[in-house]
Length: 432
Ligand code: CMC
Image 1 (cartoon, rainbow, N blue to C red):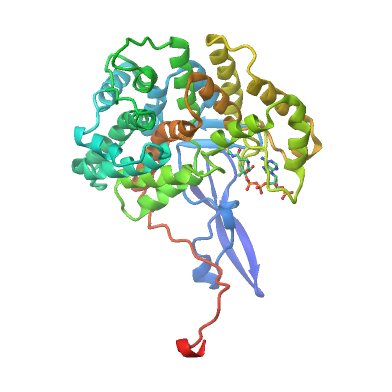
Image 2 (cartoon, rainbow, N blue to C red):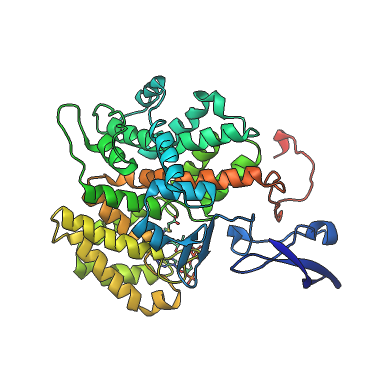
């Protein structure tokens, strides 16, 4: 980020004029540096939901929401999804450049060799009720990693940060698969080092000790692509949560657990689960107009889940790849007439041509198609957000590392506009 002193933003407040520097990024909007605002004016900025606030500088991911562009380290998401694989994307996010063949081999080996969990961690799962939501298990078990891997919690040691980062990317599929197996009462399946990242995950989820399982390459490729599409998304709610948690110096496992907790909400990672439930509720193409009407009614809290995005005011580029992946999965599994897909296709058509959705720039987002795809692959809806968390872990870890390495990093501490009672004296309980 370069401060361009020739460009100053002037602020006129309470009759006085103040100047603030404008900083330019490599692409995208510039920012007005208001860090001295309070010192200069005694006032704060007010921006609920941070719709106009850049909380950090970052060189990891760039989104142009108007254009519908998503770049990781400069590379378009469509190219990474089509030509690369998830482990390579992880390397790119963590290190800034695509790996050479040798670098990729070393990284793949390191990830593969860290997939097992400390054996004692198995007991953690058994402390949960069988009907616990797997995201509840994820929050607990990922946070608990800090109790098992003390040798990688010193955030001031770059080597420990590297080991923790790799451990998180390597172990998160094992934890996610165990959360699933626990919920259906099946034995945990250990990772297999001869399988690639996505195939190994499908193996840990769907194989049983009494039978050989051959993972379909098409489904493994689809899983891998789903992971790539969810790997990072700049300063979204969960990533900002990870950064805020990390800004206090908390260890990486605790920070990622905080990110998982934030991701769980239906406005964020929980939307794919909600989108599928909504499609089931709509049930048939004939009922779509009624639900579209409800979504447009200001007095009805109902929203079309899987539509709209804080940043994308154009078609979500990930949704396009997801739509294609969805068709590939349904084709591989021989699902020709899926009623949910019929509803989804028709709903998409209607919403894309409806004045309300067009005017508000509400396009289908990635969650609209990922739910149908994951359901067809055999995952229950409760696992959808878990898969999102699995894939996003690398993004959180990359953003956390960037924050820790940033010399200008300080503890995150937003201010507020206080609207409560001014100072008053305590009233004795007998007089209240
Ligand atoms: N259905 C109907 N109306 C909508 C929808 C929707 N899905 N999304 C936004 N609107 C309307 C909203 O009522 C508001 O109308 P008005 O200006 O008349 O008050 C306007 O569009 C702007 O909405 P907003 O809530 O101010 O926008 P936001 O940027 O705060 O919210 C969002 C973004 C994603 C939370 C929202 O679009 C939403 O709730 N979508 C459904 C949930 C969903 O699919 N979430 C997944 C997000 S992508 C995955 C991820 O990154 O986690």
